[in-house]
Amino acid sequence: MKSGALLLAIAVAVIACVMIMPEASAEEEHEIVTKDGLTYDINHTTNTAVLFSVSAFSDPSGNLVIPDHVPDTAIPVTTIEEGAIDLEGIRSVTIGNNITDIEHNAFISPTIERFYECAGPSSFEVVDDVLFKVDVASYSLIRYPAAKAGDSYVISNTVTELYGGAFSNCKNLTRIDFEAGSTITEIPSNTFYGCSNLARMNYDDSDKYNHLPDKVLIIENSAFAECRALGNVMFPDNLRLVEAYAFYGCGAEKFHLDWNLYFLGISVFSDCQNLTTFESDLDIIYTGSGSFEVDKDGVLFENGNGNATRKLLCYPAGKTDEKYTIPEKTTHIAWGAFYGNKHLKEVTINDKISLIDISAFEECTGLETVNLSKSVTVIESNAFASCTSLTALNGMTNVTEIGSSAFKKVAITEITLPDTIRSVRYSAFEFSKLVKVTVPDTEVSIHTGAFIGCRDLTDIYFEGDRMQFENGSLDVGLSAEDVVEYTVHIIRTASIPSDAVTDEYTILHIDKEGEHPYPYENFIGVAICLLALFGVVMVIREV
Image 1 (cartoon, rainbow, N blue to C red):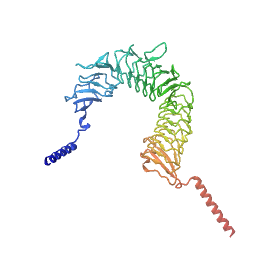
Image 2: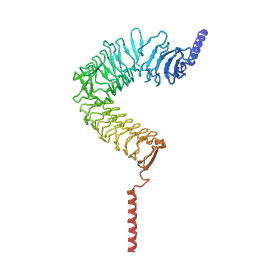
Image 3: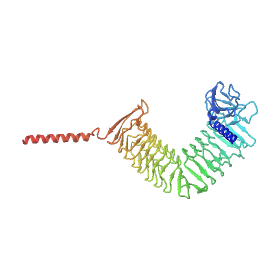
Image 4: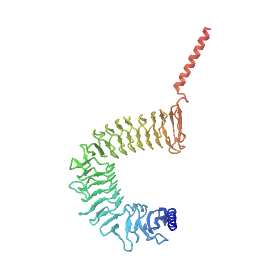
């Protein structure tokens, strides 16, 4: 029994010691050090280092050499992290001998003209200044230098993979072709981002379309974003998924959608200033869970839930119609659906739509009038941001929430919020032309900077005492050169917290009901006094 008790005591002691022993934290395992302008993340557990960023380098020729080891240590540099090399002025990069992994979008610098291989054996190679990775089962194009001379390039059919950002911001390129027989199945994020002069990609003179390789299944986020010169694009038969912002800001006049298309992310075609329509060989493209459809006006919709829902995905930014009424069956307006259309002057929202999604009408600089239906309850962030001609917002009777920057830079001068309003989010009306705002007697929360930058603002009227204010919610001025002075009018039972204004660039006057008589009150008072005096005089005369 004694030995058993002793063993039990020892076991308890050991467990207690283990429990109170400090664990090695992730911070202790990792150390961030900077040597000669290069910053490394050292992992002391694996005894390896990741090149984290480049802030300076000393080679006058502009050649950045990735060292084999962290200087003054024996720790090998094995990885180049995403976004690590973004410094302008780098003209060439020499890959270190110990590099085994280069992350996607690692080389962002716009001035790189060429790559150099390391001296020793490596899984990387440079062909015609372009960096590749060689594996047993794959051959990956990592990076075409952003400043490389030449206006065209052919991607060999031996390339099985493109890295994210492989051609990003290559301003010199006007044409890229995939060699016949390409087996590439995916265009990763940012692959051709910012190739602003890229006009042709496997262009076919017979159909006037640019073509992607037949085997491409996925186009990832922003893959062709800001390719402002890129003409019409025909989706390959096998394309299934197109992710967010994939063709944002492209120069195409039309896109041809194919029957295998299954998913379109947010704002895929937003701000394509030349885009006027979508085409398809099918009236409806079925996806399994729903369908895509191009209507008679060339507007792209997505049907779902057994056609119970109908989302307006994209109203082409290049359409020149001045008025548009959202079709009756439409139940949703997608994120960025009308983004960047400069021609629309008036939009009418139908009575099935309850939410205006993020950036739905952002940068619609010609939009003057919006007719909301009673069904609209939420106006999301940036919904009408930078609609600099917007002066009339009709029918906002049931809105409960106005999102951040929802009405940024609009030209509306007066607004009366509805009785249903519950939240005016951060910077909701920033830099707008508002002069007068009326807030009804309701439980509404005014968030920080709701009216920041509204230089013309003179009066806000709060008709109740149930409003809540965040810190800085009534800040308007921006700087010593941009001081704004205005008046808040409140009822007798209301108050404005001192931290509603947090800067010295806003001069706020509070006009509380009853404390400062209105002119008509003074007039009435004088009139009463005169009548009283007249009465006294008459009495004296009679006496």
